Amino acid sequence: MNKEEYALIENYMRMCMEDSAHDQEHIYRVLYNALDIAKTEKNVDHDILIAACLLHDIGRKEQFENPALCHAVVGSDKAYRFLREHGFALDYAEQVRQCLRTHRYRRDLQPQSLEAEILFDADKLDVAGAIGIARTLVYKGAVSEPLYCVTSNGEVLTGENDTTPSFFQEYKYKLEKLYSNFYTKRAAEIAKKRQQNAVAFYTALYREVSVPYQTGRTELEKWIGNTEK
Image (cartoon, rainbow, N blue to C red; front, side, top):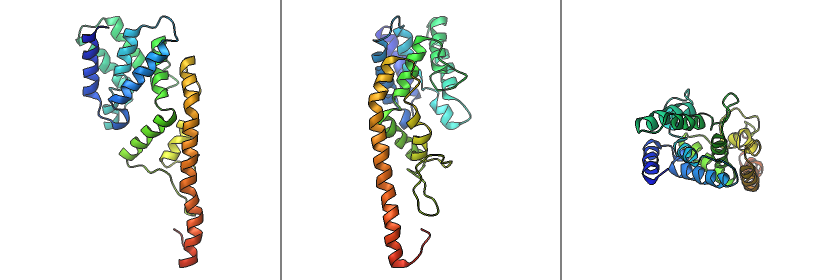
């Protein structure tokens, strides 16, 4: 891939990115993670990998406007059309499309190439560790969802088995469980190092918000009697 081709694809990506949790810096982190992983693998087609990383989230706007859509599917078709309209070979455009279609975890859409596996792992790494928590908090704030939920008895829920969306619910449902099933050894190694940061943050945050509810309600009742809040 020459500089002109890279700039063409990069500029198109920048035009498509509007989601603060999936902004262009997320794209670059995924790209750089992917290049790191690629150094440990053999026979990687870097032209396909770089294009796939740059374009993998260009369908986010459509999914945000219509949650019934899958950004991976929408984005893969957008990428294919863009590449073909700008003279890229049919086989190349199709391989990039397949990478995009399978970068989001779905049992019925598994990566079918090494480049697709690397993209999947690199994207998954950006949900791991401290960066994953930071991005989740940004997204939760953007859609006006809370940090945590509280029972009628004043107990802060851990997020486990919660049905109401919150940061704690997202952590237990998704973030806590993503540290396995990587396709590449390098990605698994990076994820393992990041995991302890995520666990420490969640543990500290839960303690900091739950303890005041436990002690504060008791203290409050001394002054105003029994209360439901």
